[in-house]
Image (cartoon, rainbow, N blue to C red; front, side):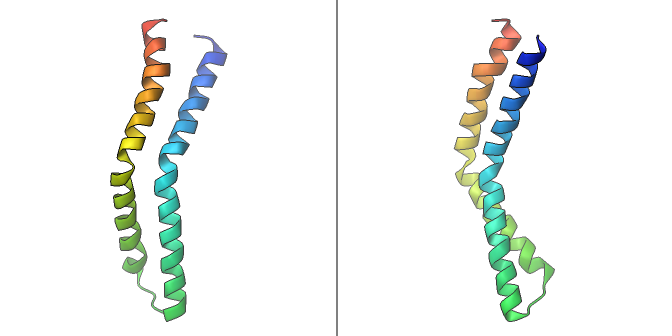
Length: 88
C-alpha cells in the first residue's frame, strides 16, 4: 500500500466520522444552548437540567439517524476498505 492511498483512505475515514457525528453534535449544541438560555433567564442552576435534556435529545437523534449512519459506514467499507483487503 502506498503512502498516498493510506492518507487518502484516512482522509475519507475522518470525513465520514465527521458526517456521522454531525447530527448528534448539532442537536447537543442546540439543546445545550436552549437549556443554558433557560437557566440564565430563570436563574435555575441545576447540573442535571443541562445533562438530561441533552442526553435524551441525542438518543432520539441517534435512533432516527441510525440508518443514515449505517448506510454511510457500509458504503465506505464496501467501496474502499473491502477492495483494499481483497487486493483489487
